[in-house]
Length: 192
Ligand SMILES: C[S@@+](CC[C@H](N)C(=O)[O-])C[C@H]1O[C@@H](n2cnc3c(N)ncnc32)[C@H](O)[C@@H]1O
Image (cartoon, rainbow, N blue to C red; front, side, top):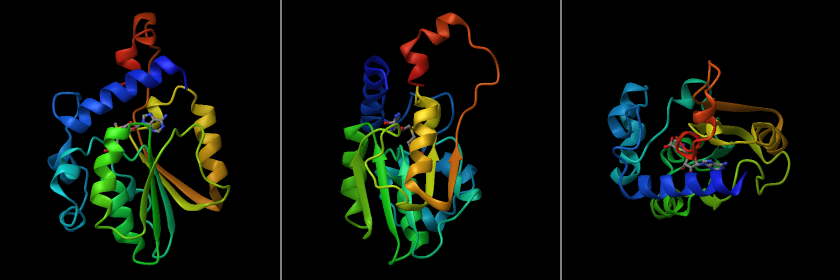
């Protein structure tokens, strides 16, 4: 990832970790999660500050739910809401790793993670995942891959850490038009 894009993203999400409102054109937090079909029972055990900082763009669990005992990676986990839902679905023999670029988002996830055995949170980038090949049955991601400037590297890495037959369940934003040069040159656009 280019250093300037990385700096812009970390600066933005440091602010989101402090104050989640006012940064996005789409809804965030608990109301957004309920609208996207997250079950209230999944949200109930998760600390309120984490749910308030849910800034995903969809619901990856509508695509695939972790099997009991499965190994799950949430790339770009933010404050960890999806990772904690994955931990509930994977059960006590499951294992969930969350990875994110922004230390301030991870700090909240790690604090809340004390309530969820079998979870861990690591700092890193999706373009260079700090895991052995075939480490996971399921990779989930919510609103993250659009932020990765090197998408080939991101997908290559996800494929490397998935076991053969493993699944990527990703919710994301897609560009469907050619973007104007001023947008392509805007750090704000790269980090939104
Ligand atoms: C829109 S937020 C989504 C957070 C979380 N998935 C959620 O649904 O609330 C994007 C997250 O991706 C992280 N991020 C952005 N680029 C990343 C990259 N290349 N590798 C890992 N994390 C990244 C940001 O730090 C931020 O926490």
